[in-house]
Image 1 (cartoon, rainbow, N blue to C red):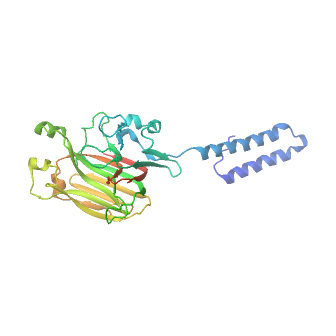
Image 2: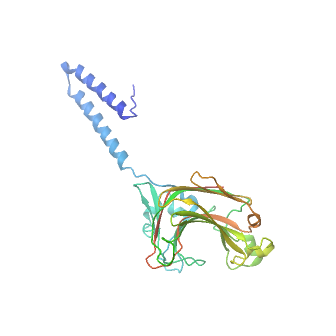
Image 3: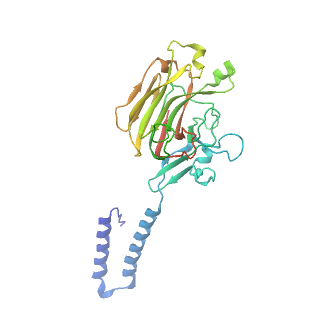
Length: 314
């Protein structure tokens, strides 16, 4: 008969049961009686030690994420990047250049993203330790449209950020999530653009403990055709919405994108919905981003963002 021990109370009953058996057989006790009890106790102690020593990691599947770092260790003139196949199955733990910037905190089962002003991407002045979605890990030009839609859900927190002594803000601002636009391969071929970079459709900011959403909208809603692919601030501007205060505490966030409609939600608050002509005319394909994008070039600026889980679906 097999005995399954599930709780501390059931273990105690089991031990008492063994003690009764040993006591009843004391008249003809053999060494095997006490040996069995000692072995059971020893096995229980070993199992408890193994449970305590097993580290718990953030729930993030890197199958469709690459990471961009704020350094150029390979001296190619661009921020270093590591692809999904290098990050998957805890591969990031073995990459020495990655570890200072993206590493595990097993105390609270989080993945820490650390960054500071250093090397930036071509289209930005700011550095980042940030994940970029690749729906096809072999082709970064394959992305998704609003008609196809997608959803990103994460639990995260800004755990530490430098003070801002150059403005009225208390701390430097950090972008923790994005839907970023990208010019499709078809439009690249038609127009012969030198860059496929599009504007960020959604940027989720942490500003002095408040979570803000910035969403791109047309300055002139009559803009149409190829003029929609003009990425400058003369065509698109940000609508800014304060979603609420989180401070340095963990919070849940969701971004859901569908045809001409975007829904964002902080914790269990009522979702905020964007549904307008600018979304209906949005000419770009898209990809999700998540991590730590520090919007400062100030000397000694820094930020730490922790992710506990992160999922994307399409």
